Image (cartoon, rainbow, N blue to C red):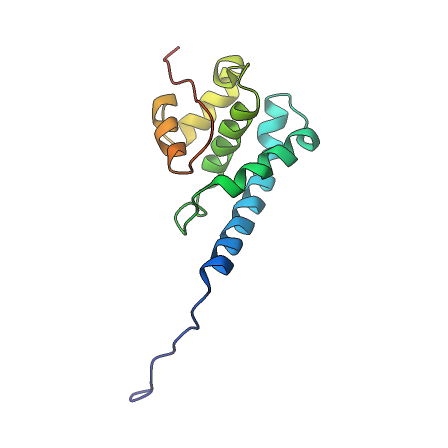
Length: 129
């Protein structure tokens, strides 16, 4: 009612906040990895530990954990590309990957810029095919 003090939420320690963001990020990656891995003929069980190991390198914020499902698929695509640099995944599986890129209205070059914000330690081939 009127005259009541506003509700104040307790401050969250930055490490707790980062831990929560990593947990949400990991959950979303795990949820979308099977779709991507199966389409690219990779084993989810073999790829999951490596994909999860990337998370500690990301600069996470409230904006980088609120992607839509198509964006999570593309993030997994990029992580698998980092794990398997010897294979151009976009070139090798154009039907699946082009649909994922179309779903987020992006190009391979735009994909590199998007993933830069996550501080990925890998090279993404952005040459047009």
